Image (cartoon, rainbow, N blue to C red; front, side, top):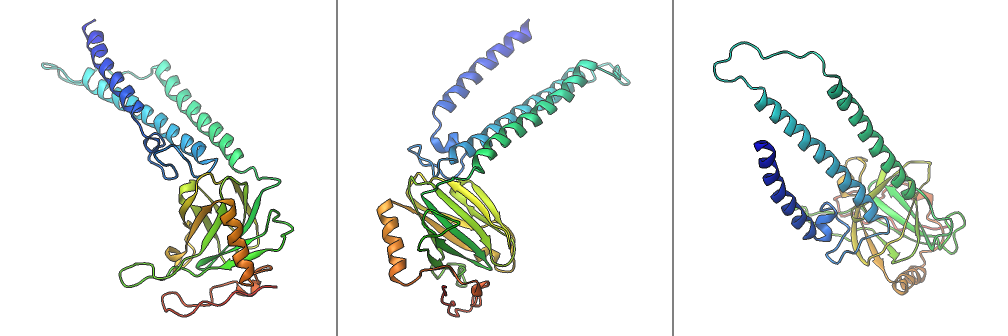
Length: 299
């Protein structure tokens, strides 16, 4: 009885402290300190909150299992310790069927639960828009990115325009000294990215969007989402792809619809129209040498 009373007195303040802490959480804290959220509760895409929810819930479950396990280990070490005046081994127990069933069934339930929620969210993330507002072909190459804007149809581009990128150049102190490739997207519009690789396996990762997709030579991959917050976001290759992998960076700039249309018009004015020529399968300049990048060609 005394033990139960003590536990109650300990549990009550812990519960109150936990409730106060959770209630005071900022959006960033509530989402596991992941990027892609601002203090006003805004998220980078329409899927960012769902991804963060899966991540934080998984960690909460795992932490709860860990705390219970550590508590049971501590309790067993204290309750069954050798008392003063005792000698020899304590009573040895060979089997305890309820405990064995518990520690068999519980992990199975946890694994099935993780699988079910992951499969559910992944199915949503991998569902592609049938009629996107914007379709962009993102091409990975050693060690930069090309972007071709195809209108609203990936299979039948309407007056495509493009930009060709150069990998990041750095000085002796590691500071980037050139303009790295930039992908421009309109806010609150359905976007489908058609992901391709010119040479080896790359991985297209926009950090604040909390998702990445691999890019394979000879195979097209797709990613659909809706940017919901204007701003500039960091992107990079997340697959080791050679000597200058760490310099394969890009930015994603989410702008208003009018700014996006102006950007597309500016590319047309520069003559950067048509499909990107496959002749530029690899970088034509030597990283770190300051050699000029090859000018893009088009059909």
